[in-house]
View 1 (cartoon, rainbow, N blue to C red):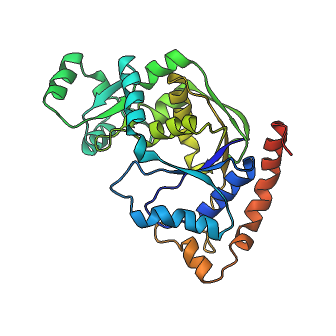
View 2: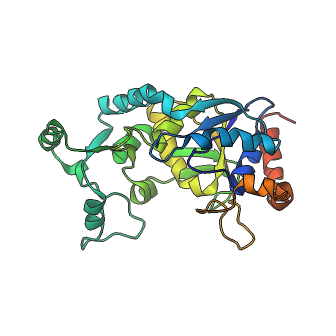
Length: 295
């Protein structure tokens, strides 16, 4: 069983990171808890945070193997985007944030959770070619309706604490995917890739069998399963854990939250603070491991 802890080097680790790394280590077989640095957004990454990640994990007694640096795999990300382009599963999107907001505010029926309205999907090939020939800045969006017609049912195995509904095999309806998630960006204008695309490629390259992460990322999972199937990548099992809140009930991941290294320097008992959440998560971790024939 192979897991990964995948922070971004845009700040020091906080208490929520500590819990997330603990969950990943508990699920993994010894020596198969891997580190990945998710740094595709180089505008926010800082050198000091790369080294701080491993230092803080070591201070907590958590072990990780290797360190895959996501930004070093641009060629793989470009290859995957080209595969999607060759199959006409993505289209260039020239919309600005203002364009999208105005389209969403237009007098038409939609709910607050509606996804991208598909403005650029409706452009003709001639329009697209003209804009591309003029080097108009653009992202690439997944044509989700077309993708779903190819792959069929989107489902995955959830072992943790989804934000709604019980754990088990999660089947996501086509209507929900199209209405709530829609044509997501798979390659941003500024970096040529996206969180979704980079994550599924790294998970496959690292042979990840179980993705463990906070349940605030639960809704990214169906889109990633779509990409995994389109690119013929393995679909891992998932364990979405609850988010850690501080003493005031605010999420530990919020901006300017106390960092792990500050807590360590103050001799805070980090594991004591996390004990209730660890106790809640452990039975589900045990159930997962038993299902794989593990002690």
